[in-house]
Image (cartoon, rainbow, N blue to C red):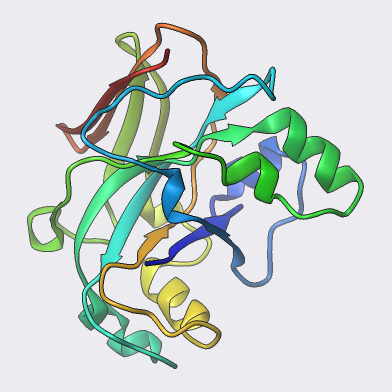
Length: 203
């Protein structure tokens, strides 16, 4: 099972990170040991002093596919949820400045909390879905999939040129603007529309 992640896929987030808008999807992978399920708490690691949240729509691949055309991409997923791409921003900034990979800042244990999956059919138009993150009852991040630089179907078409997509693979589709720090005892609740799909604590 692969966890495929797309970076800088919302214009305002790319701007807040001080990066140019990408001309094609920015792709990185997380290992399955990053997954945090069932609303289990996330424990702040000792190797970073700048752990941040990035709320994302996550789709689950439902069938085997390779070299998928954009017009057929919708056939390859039927469930989605919200996830958090937890990032050690200090490590990412240091590595990026040196031209080094992001893995140490994105791929550590528990760095991919996942919410409850729901049918895509229940979410309405996949190209126009509202989602948000609340921390301790305050909205800190909100987005809509219409603001993606690359749509979900475009992402699937792009990554399937390089990776065979298998049933159960996950794709984190990018985060909107508003990323920020996490601290001990924060309670994170992520909503798809008005439905909470993810609710966990920072320890």
